[in-house]
Amino acid sequence: MAILCTPEQSVPNLLEQLRSTGVIRGVLNFTPTPLRSDEQFCVQNIDIRMELEKLFCLIHFDKHRRGTNDVHKKCCALKTAEVT
Image (tube, rainbow, N blue to C red; front, side, top):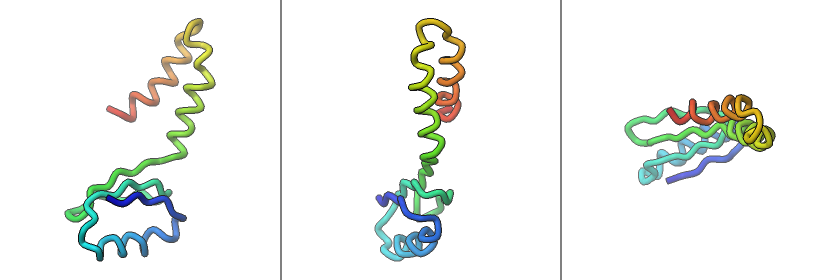
């Protein structure tokens, strides 16, 4: 497995290097460039910006959980929607 967390311009060269090894089967991609799975790689793209935004939302609206549940439910819906 490889974990990519590099500048966008480095992705094509790095991906080619990974392909040339012949042993990498999975890629966890934290780069801003979405990658696609193919016959050689299983790719999981992680958009860290969206994950941080969801976490901020959950933290920010946590105080509303006991009172106004609607805001917390909307925030949590972001997390649930991505999973399904």
